[in-house]
Every structure is written in C-alpha cells, then in structure tokens.
Length: 384
Picture: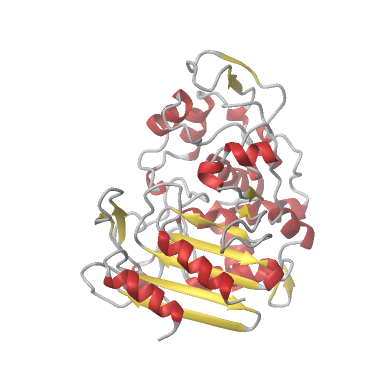
C-alpha cells in the first residue's frame, strides 16, 4: 500500500471521510489513489472517474475565464465594472465596519475588473461574521452557504448586493467569495454567452474536461458523490445533497465561485495548462502573461495579515491563494490554488512542475483546512 493510499484509507476507516480521490503529479509522473465510497451507504466505490462538487476550487477556473476576455481585448483589468454591471454603479462604503448599514460615504473611485479578481472590491466575507455587512450578505443573498444552486438570478442577486455597502474603499481590503460571483456575471455579460457555455467552449472542450460543468446529466450520476455536512463538534456526517439533487440542472445563477462539478483528471488538465504557461494540446488558450498575473500575489502585507482566518498568511492571485512563505511543511513559495467547502483542494506548484488535487465529499466546518488536507499537502511536499 502506498503512503498516499494509506493516508486516505485511514480517514475512511476512522469515519472521517466516506471516500476520497487524490492526485499528485510531478513532471510526467502521476500518482492517483481512490479510497472509500461515493456515499455512506457504500453503494459504489470511489474511482478515478468519480465526479465531485468542486465548491471554491471552481474559483481559479472562473478567473481564467475572465483572463480569456482580457486576452481577447474585450475587457481590461483597469476597466470599471459598472460598464457591464450597471446595478453596482455608485457604490457606498460603510463609514465603520461595525456600524449601521445606512451610515455610509461614497466610494472614492469605481470598482475595477482587477478589484474583482483580487477580491478587493469591498464586498465579501470577513473574519468578523457578526458585522452588519456580513450579516446582511448572509441574510439577503446566501440562501444556503453550501449550495450555490439556490442563489437568486443574477439580476436579483446584483440588486440585493447593491443595497449593501462596501466594507472598505475599492482596493483597500480583501474580502472572500463575492469577487468570484461577480466574475461569473461579468463573463456572461461581456461575452454575451451564458457562463457554462463560455467556459465549455473556451476551456473545458479544448482541455478535454468532459466531466466539468454546472450540472450532472442523468447518464453520469452513477459516478456522482453524495455530499455531507460535517458537524464541527462531533465530526459526524449528515446528508447535504444527493446525486439526483441540486446539481440535476444548470441553476439560474451559474456560480463560478462554487457551483462546478469535476473530476481529478479534469482539474489536472486545467492545472497542467497553467504550468505550461497557458498552452495545452498544441494551442495557446491563455497568454503566459495572464497565467503570470493569476498566479502572482497581489496583496499587501497588511491585507494578508487582516485576512489571516482565510489565508493563513498566504497571498492572493486571481481566483486562488499564493504561498509567499514556507512557514509550514506544505507551504511551498509560489504554490497557487485553493480549497473548497465541500472538502476539496487543488493547487499547482510551478517551481516543481507539480499539481496536487484532493477531492472528498465531507464538507469543511469553517475556513481552516481540515487535517486530511494538511496531511495530503505535507505528503505532496515531501515527495518533491
């Protein structure tokens, strides 16, 4: 039994995970292990072809979609977003983070495409879950934090968001998640194509990502996992979504922040493209400069420190974190990628030419990655 398989099997035997698929690629060598089952009933074993809800591991893919439009010359990083998202024109900023929602001042400049990509628009989640702005976002917009398929249609979503003030002036602070939701709408409006169709045409088909999308057709549901919530106190798992549940059809708001499904090999194809400077299968899908911008930390030291709960000292590129220190065994400077609340993680390590992917169906209990992820990253780092 390999060390990687032993790591996964141990978690399954202890009941921490129903199952998992892990992939570690270094250069031309690819190690893949599948352990456990697609559900607690053990109706089918995990395999390399099992389909998972990516959750926030969708974010790098969506950021790549924005950069395709930048490469096309249809948008620029310094363009104000209100050209395409007029609902968000003339945003207001909370005078104080913990003040009432109606105590605001005007934004001192427009929100730009760059602000959305770096999560510095002023809208999003922070470590202070009790702040009036955070509470308003959860109350009015996030109908079920783990199921983005329940979001309101884009027009309604934007109208709701426009009534909530920014936490800070554009560009001044990092907040989580909403930047990717807005990228989802931006791509559709700039391209004139629904997000699922745009990503399929420009990324999924050229990369051979045949099992990646925003819904799972009936013919593939025998490969689709059941999703479980994890009790933060006991670790017990409870049902969140079945294979024939929320991902039956493409939702009214296709969420590039957390709504995609995929397999280990599909995300590996995406990660390989990034490692190759945007090239895949004889085509230059993304420019090398776009890949460089995606995988470069754009935060100030102060912004990283203020976002410690989510980033743990990491920086942020476009759609994913960037390791800036080696303070932990698995922290490799330059590593780019992200984790998903459904129990997923995917990264590239440019200096090592490596891709690491861990897919489970046991949800995280908060922003801090669970032990299985950290053990997996340590394994991947030690094998380099």
